[in-house]
Image (cartoon, rainbow, N blue to C red; front, side, top):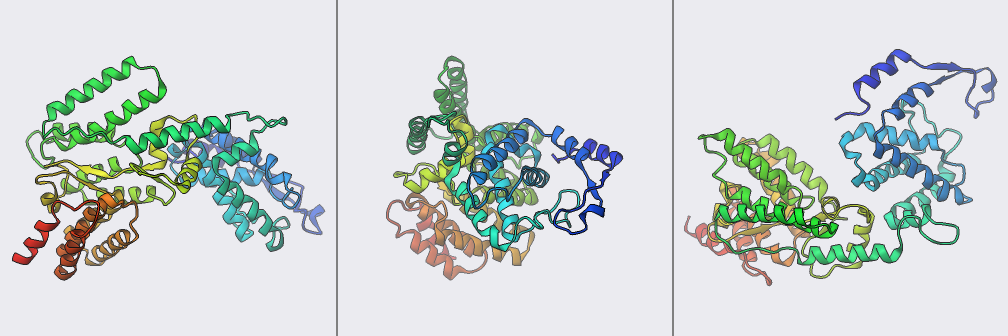
Length: 465
């Protein structure tokens, strides 16, 4: 959805602008100059804000008042009009659905990043006339350095630092929450992420999955504790991912519409587990149904979500950097599910005989499930899409991106390293580079914590071809 909506744009066009006898203060002949004023249009834009946009603007103004203007070196350099302009630009650049209450801090950071770029360039484009630099006579190379330092500190301190600076009483008590409470919810969340993967060793029995889903739904009705409810919702989403993979192959033509509708129901539930794994399964669905452009679009989205400040699921030892990253992305008023979608990345698990695994990877799920990092699987899907459409240049680029991802071990744990190297080998093999593929299978068989179930078979198959 776009912002501003067309109805507001039309109203602003009809209303035009005002001409006021006030010239730029930094010019000597300002007394005889006139200025275009868009104050009426700005009011209409602000009135079109949703609740989260308004909160974001309030948070920016509080930051200006309590942090930026309390520093003697930066006091007066920024004004609320600059902040409002940043919010206008960000609102236009992203989908308006981005402005949700659960993503308030993320939206605030987008605006903060926009302001940092402007200050760094000493250029703040007017929303209505971008060629007009509103920083003229206000921010220059000399005074911008200290302002950038202050803005970066706000960014680095994260949500905890922001709350501490903005919502602090004079007597030293937090308006919003205490440090002890915040530490408590973070430790509880991370504990759950560490132990949450409960896998029931049932075979390909969709009836068992459906019974589990009904059981969890009944359990949700009887629980009142918010955390327990959120844990149940997570497991419901996880079991929905498994159920989707046990449905009939989505390529069949018999009752295709009805089958695809069932897929979408479970896949939509499955995206609620974390920021990425459910979307990878969705991308796989579109790949096996031959909708390669949709797959490529989804993999772009997934890779944009898997940034370095995300927290991995099932980490055996969360370090200080994980905790700091987590604090920067979430706050205690968010639900556990919203926090997971905002800050946590999990591996995608393809069940044994999964109907969503690409045909090229069927060997990997013949007798076992396989866990694959979302970064690895996304680049693999991109490679497979370009391989299908015959775009050799983009196929090679995807293969290079996949190799780089594996080498950097991006979201790859010791448990999934062998699987990831095997996936890389398969892509090299499909590209015709059998020597490198063989080396990958050899390397996959030498990993310590876990050996990919198909690596040996892939190696032998390559030798006999």
